[in-house]
Image (tube, rainbow, N blue to C red; front, side):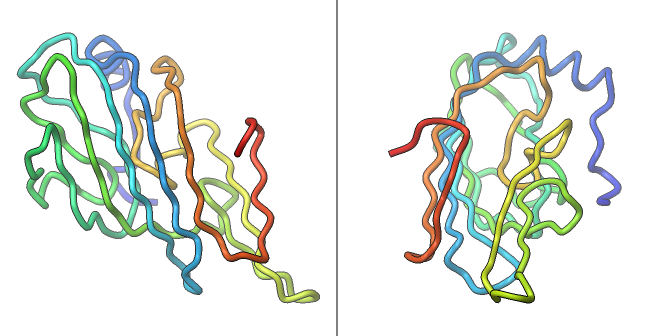
Length: 166
């Protein structure tokens, strides 16, 4: 586990007072034949204290680009487990392009190759602090959000969700 991959009670309490109504638009590219996948995320959220600094949880090997309100976020704002978000506005838009790791620990997005049929199987598990292993998010239960997911997968895969899809 990454040493910074933890959320303290005080951090969660402060962030819940600061951040409101996040909306996530997440696109995943699962077509790579590798241990990684691509994630593109656009997150809209409100801030109760314009000018404040907060962070979004994201455990990934690399962030390829990150913009907050149309301005580039410095590379050093990402420490491998979270992205620091400075000078927040009333209404914010965060856009992140990243490379993510598949997990094999039962949390995040897990990838498994069946030794019998040689097919690839994926499943996700986000309780209680594991959604940020797949996409950047304010990963705490008191920050309820709406999500839109788009998945690019190999043509022979079946993609299933617990929400109605298109």
